[in-house]
Image (cartoon, rainbow, N blue to C red; front, side):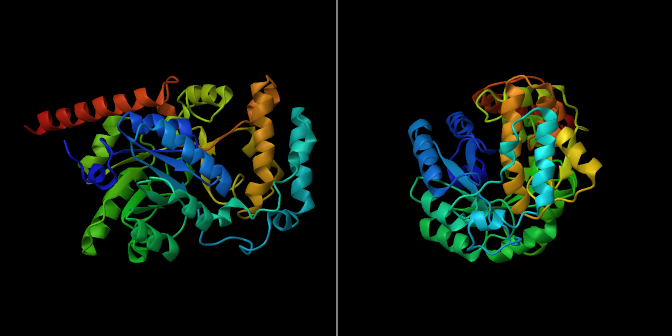
Length: 372
């Protein structure tokens, strides 16, 4: 059965898998879906290595890249990471050291990320240039309105540009900017998200696009963990599904065994929208990390300051958690949506795609039978 999105990007099934892990991206694309590599954590050189690896392991199947170019940041783009780190108040450095000390983790891990490079949130153009040197079939902007340079580059290379939105007014801004695909992510989703529920957001965005006289496909995102949910979204008019959290519980994912175990144990009420990781609201698995900040009453720093402060601390916590530190295990967290309540076991990414296909077909068959 042909789908609009499969024709646009060349995949077999319109299931888009956002992941920071190249193994997930390749496995999903090989299974007929469409893997999208989240590039925010990479320097241009690192992204080059990741994409070269995907090229060698994707069996010629299509894949895409997601970059993060925020519209508003707390610092000028041309300053170095070291200069930005110097802006982090000592109170925040001392507090993260206290968290590590109380958990029995080496305090030197509280040193914020630095270096001669600018922080990754301002490397969008360089990451795009790297991406276009590879056979990518989609470029996505993860935060804010897609900049003119991205739109122009997509048109130049004949590659569709997608943008993530959390409200219908944001979707209209993206369309005015010239994007080819809208990814409408409900507040249930992991990572940076808005407040509107997916089941409300999808028809709102689709109707707003139609009322504007436009013909832009919409991918549904936020809390979608299986093919039945995907079928429901497409029954409302979505052109496919964009999923992130479901891949975190796969054997190929970048997540630790500790976090995957926490996912299996979690309910849909065990997530939180918090600024205490990146500086912007993102949904994560609630842990003692959030409790510490809330109890202290310390507000989050803006992006990218909070991210530069928190990431090395959370990586050290993850390492200690894997090594059996119970206090670190309590602090361990990661981006994940409310769909975590549907996670029952760790599976392979390819198996997840096959399950999506089967459940998707069953969902539509059940709907057709109900109205026959």
